[in-house]
Amino acid sequence: MRIALISEHASPLAAPGTEDAGGQNTHVAALAAALAGLGHDIRVYTRRDGPGHPPMVAVRDGVTVVHVPAGPPAPLPKDALLPYMGEFGRWLGDRWDRDPWTPDVVHAHFWMSGLAALTAANPHGIPVVQTFHALGIVKRRHQGTADTSPARRVGFERRLGRLADRVVAQCRDEARELVGMGVPRARISLVPSGVDLDLFTPEGPVAEPPGRRPRILSVGRLVARKGFADLIRAMLYVPDAECVIAGAAGTAEARRLRLVAERCGVEHRVRLIGQVAVADMPAWYRSADVVASVPWYEPFGLTPLEAMACGRPVVATAVGGLLDTVVDRVTGDLVPPRDPRALGHALRRLLRSDMRRFGYSSAALDRARTRYSWQRTATQVEAVYQAAAGVRVEAVAR
Image 1 (cartoon, rainbow, N blue to C red):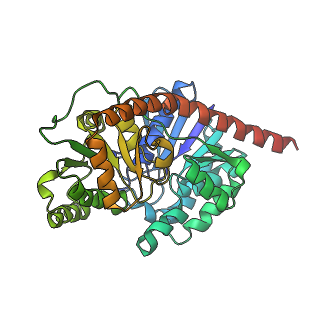
Image 2: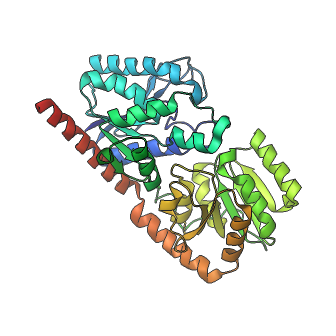
Image 3: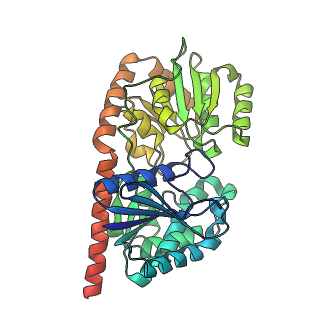
């Protein structure tokens, strides 16, 4: 199949950890590669956010990134991109009118990509598959007035969920939210994200082996909803451990976290090591006794899977996709969000039991390898594409 992946703000060429670059970038890049490995021809369409970007970049056999001229050729926050989605969609439609490469299916990633995808695909009769990666209704519930999303986001997402031929939910919690929004249950396919099992392994180098203190590692963009401040406060209940936080430093959030550590009196046991290259992350996971992933909400969450693939137990908040990936008291422990005391007690219990950590580690590795390979994810997504294409063929025949 010829498959168009639309990812308006999250380019697979961007470095994860920079502003608005995170799990979606990794997901789109890995999915494209895995689909190409199944023999499909993939083009990823993303907004041109720099004047020097070439129109097309061949990433590997079967995968090409196309930079779409929509809006100014400069970096913009994703919440400022809505006015350019009509232009994005019209450019795609014109391109597919003139280019012999016309997709058999379009897969939109994020809600704004869905708007552009429907604009371009509907006149051509091309089926559209939608993955939201995050839902505005959930973001608004947790962030309230701090939510910077466009006011019309929730309404657009409801409409997209009903107009797309198929909607891919990444976890059971998201599927429930989609049904609550009015998306027909029969149109929803549950397909989790994957993890690179060739890169994230238990064997290999270890970054800065811990000294006399057990190490708790946490990874992610330094934004408030990731719960790093809660983790720092939890260190009051884990007096013998050190906490290492990997994420882009030099931001206001990094300064706030250092201040939290000072106020709690744990600054000598908390380290912010800044952004770590993807290739170096497995070594950091291997250096940890336990990995903490404690967001207030999380549409899916890749870092727990990466830790599990490296054979590390995970203490996570019982939210979103983490309810699916982390099996409570089997591969790790689940705790309530925004509860430093409960988090601290869970970390302390786990660090004091070598037997429990070993059991969790073995189960985590097995779960990552058997349930979350990118090959498995790509095969499931391929079936969604085939179902969406079949629905369109039947509709045309009627």
